[in-house]
Image 1 (cartoon, one colour):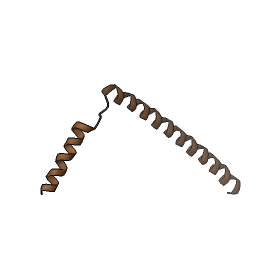
Image 2 (cartoon, rainbow, N blue to C red):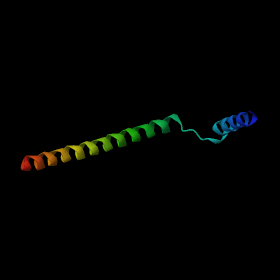
Image 3 (cartoon, one colour):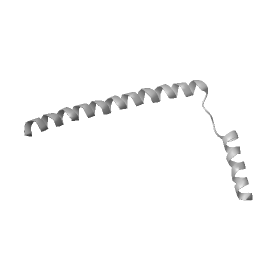
Image 4 (cartoon, one colour):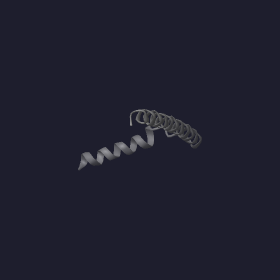
Length: 64
């Protein structure tokens, strides 16, 4: 039980004294970057899916 208590004491100490937390402005900037990157990745995947669908429709229409 002592090891568990010591572990949580060390975790608390590290989170409070050693970790550098971002400021609110840094957090907002990171959020905007993540949202833009997610949107771009989603658009690229949508474009790939739509183009693959059209190619497969063309292939199937030629053979069936």
